[in-house]
Length: 124
Image (cartoon, rainbow, N blue to C red):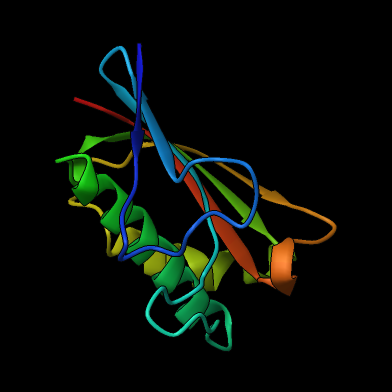
């Protein structure tokens, strides 16, 4: 059985998918673009965009009753690997030293020309 998770503090899906799905004690958070849900705007630069993407992940997890500490795996999609260092600096601030497993990829293009998109799996 699965449950749809949705937060009004994170941007709504821009296609036929859910912000997150909970199944069998895991929450699967869809890729979060760096869009501010209140304004619909995307900040400039990788630092601001990484911050917004991670804030969006945090909001979706909160809607499921979880925190960033529940994340077991993340995937980071970058517009260019030259952005990795600055993204990584922001990313490290969201965890308490017990970092989840992670993959990071440079992709040809992200929706809305974002510089970063972050998805995760969390466990109860």
